[in-house]
Image (tube, rainbow, N blue to C red; front, side, top):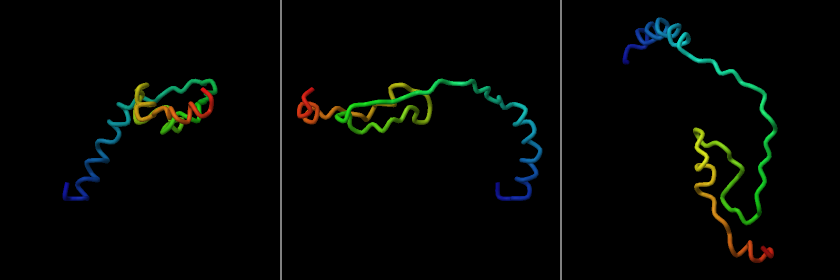
Length: 74
């Protein structure tokens, strides 16, 4: 909208409705979570959620450094 004052008026009218429609999350206690990985797992920095919950996203760009793994005796 080009008219800033009109935009603010509309937002003031709409905001109470938007807040009524919001679902407030009820957060429960969660246990501690630990992330461990081997030195040969490259390009993974313990990220668990990138954007939204997609388990495959966590390791999509990670890769195993086979040379390092062999050099370490595994």
